[in-house]
Length: 271
Length: 87
Image 1 (cartoon, chains in turn orange, blue):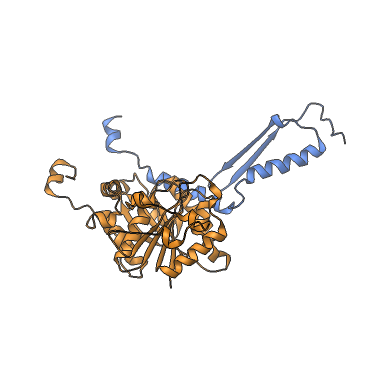
Image 2 (image 1 turned 180 degrees about the vertical axis):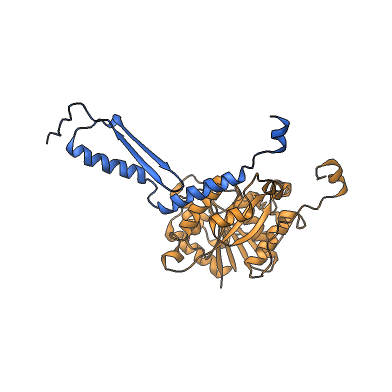
């Protein structure tokens, strides 16, 4: 039975697209048949993070409007063959996605894949509500920072009221993914702790992604961080989060950077 | 910043936590009615305007959210003559 997963947050810039790419790739590496779908119409970026920006011909809007077949728009990943991308369009028309069209496309994707991972745009407007509309599972990406936590709270409220599952009186599985976490700063009382955020948002924790230079390095070259440097701290954190998503019971910890002698001596990584 | 301050830097995270807890308690209660203050202002003014002519510029509305109690303060400057509304 296929699962539709929405990666959402309310606030922009907290790591939705990075997380979608990393989680999608890790799911695919675990043997699942995965499609990552970019719902950020007008500001597509998942193609760039996945390194497929030069292969985009058709997009989600073309498929929703019936101008292209689903198979024509799907881009198969060159590194993991069970991973595909459905890019967003660059059109500025906000009404390009229709509720009926999205329902039909998500339904078709359910038939083809084990996991449909929807990368939500920021905000609480049409794009964000359509991205979460048909989700069975939601990952709420949150930074340990007041505005991000507040917006996540709003989004959790919407997941519980505006989704198809919520309207049918069913439960939607919600998970918290805390990104850009700095254990040192949290210990020193300069950053909200994991427990603070968990107590406030009151949804189960899927993983803690440490703030890391590896994330930018991976996006620079267009590769999900879980594929680019699997032994890096964020990649290990994402991979563990995916194992939890697949039902394994693993304790949540914050992976630490493994520093070599050179970086210990000079305080930075030799890239 | 003195050396003393440097060694005992104030911890800001507990403040963030308290502010969030307070704010979200209110926002959750008002969910879907986030413009409550505006709605109240309009309705209260409409009631008063039924009885006396008031100048919209001389109305001051303040909403203050406290830990245990919130206050909605509506300050209306009454015209000297208290002229009734002509229907």
